[in-house]
Image (cartoon, rainbow, N blue to C red; front, side, top):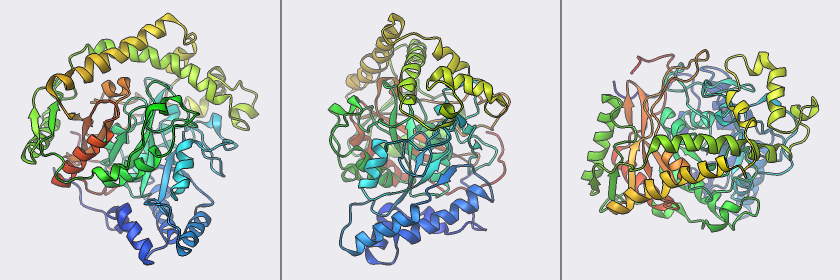
Length: 519
């Protein structure tokens, strides 16, 4: 089955699906468009397809000051000040990214409903400085999908179940589910997303948008509800590589962040300068055959076509280029790392939050307090799945524990120096490619997510970048390809991804159909 056609019924301002950030800027510069009008158009779409119509549940709240901010930015432009490519551009933020304004930051949990954080996350502050309009907060898998192994991706206590815009009974994937849905449905120009392992690239694939997961440290995590300081990364969902590169440039620019020591070695770049339609010529691309290949003929066929397209565009294909290390052992080590770091990192974050439900109801501002809060509100928070991962994390000791130290060493070594680095060095590769995931599975609130294809883990454990782009449709559902590189190779991956995107032009807008045949 081919790609779905664009819905044209009651969907307002359908042109927003195809308009790029650069095109918005041209219209703003010419006076044909104002930031206030653009915000009004996005708010109309949010009302029509998020709150009403297909009820996507992608946007938890809109910024009550968005129109006022837009008017101020319009006045700046009229006075001759344009801050950059994002001036007047509305962007949504995942609900685990702090904003010190009239919006909440809850990680999807009722425990954090209440007062806003005292400070912006560094990413939010950099967007404001760049002239972007923080349009609202997107829904997400609660606590970034680190509450239970049996969760339904896209569900959170605060907002309920998010819905895939290509087929409303399919998972939007997690944990940056709302950012992926909202971007696909053109409820914003782009959205911020976060990833510990798969939470940018998996929703990008499930919802048919571009996802950039930067190397750990390229973008500050300060002011983001954490899972793991080793693996957490803040990135972008957008409808094109060019749009994603523009947002990443704003996030990664500026000096190192003293609130996130991982940024000390990262150097910001203008990633839009790497948008080369001939960027695949002469590039050495390795096919990671032990990452997601062989799981089904539909996925394999779409990937093989993309590989042929890269070859025809001048790339040198090295096939196979499998990850040589023990990926099962790396996965087991990763789980231990995440359990230890989630407890330590979340406790540090919660100590800075005041005036939220956890605090007002007398629960401790730590993981143990969240567990107790969930138990006290089991009718809403634990109605569909439990909190086994939280309980396992709470049982872990401090980060000086030898179990943690050994697990971290194993996870990093098998994924980095003996994993991605080794295969890329052996074949002198510019990037590895693998399917980002298979077509989205059906939502199952009773049993949780079905076992699904995912290939993000080796890069996640190493803290390395991934750029995921749409390459086709399987049974009407979108599918993405991931470019995986070594640390700080974002510019190379953007170049390769843009060239493949331009060679395929595979993305199509969603139609919000109730269901599609299973793949």
